[in-house]
Length: 404
Image 1 (cartoon, rainbow, N blue to C red):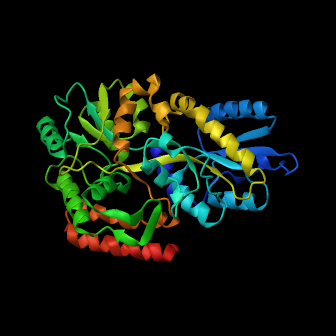
Image 2 (image 1 turned 180 degrees about the vertical axis):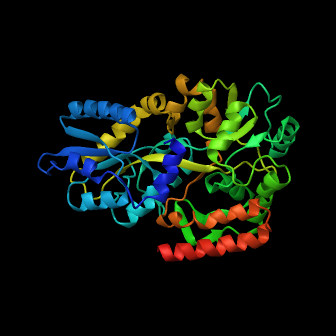
Image 3 (image 1 turned 90 degrees about the vertical axis):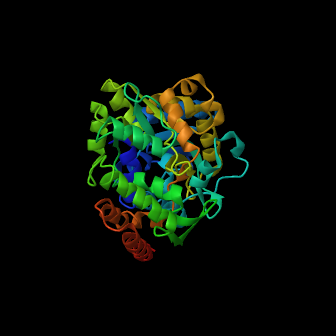
């Protein structure tokens, strides 16, 4: 499963999870007397091995015991384990969109104000992602978003605006520009750029009663998206990510919107491509969704002080390993300035886009939006954006109310 799918699945199935017995079984021998710090991680196996290696160095230096466990459990599993004293002290490498659900249940400890220096991190939006009601409950580890891929052999000039992109793509051919246009994970970028939004508020304080799916900006974005399908005929309304990906891979498309999870496949296919920030729309930078992998300390832990100390050590020492092992884009300025990151043109394209990205909402009500926003398919099919926008707004409002 690619990173983007895993990221979305984490949001859509936050209350489901799959590996309670594995995670809890590994941690079940822990007692408060042993003072063993147990860390659960949702990262990939090879990344978890690196985290464990670093954690054991800290343990040796501090005469402590640490167990790092690969675990993909969701909210319900974590809740059950934490309340039975079999849960972890720390979660390292969990998508930030889980934060609201976990915090609402009282499972997360607020980050100490003196734990890290926020000025050492790349941007304020990174901290907004791990904040709830204005307070930070997690520490950022890495970040991801999607950006524009372009075929270096066929693109004469890298476009700076969507208008330039459309002109060049149309001159190339009918399928010149491809992306999963019916997937709100991607189309939200254009809605948010024009002034629409999922939930109102900001600074880590989202207002789930304030929805922006039918305002003037959102409707303008829907019209733009409809034109890409109906007027410019770049892609069918029911396009899938696989189709868009394969069209770019084959050279039939010269522009494609995707994420770091697409890089390896294109390299393996021998595509000569570049990555850059998505071109501006109506003079505005594109507000794509931002994903942040984060670390949390359990409010049920008996080893909070040691857990924070270990977390600080892991974050300081794991950035380069997670980048080279799992292609995790660092969030610390010091890591971004290392040659391995600075000299990677693909990474630099995604980093450029993160400057404008908006954190995926981290409140539990977010899971309620995904079915209602499928109505955007109607707009792509040719229906009046103004009419459908009102339907989307009402459907999301109703779904959010039910989810509370």
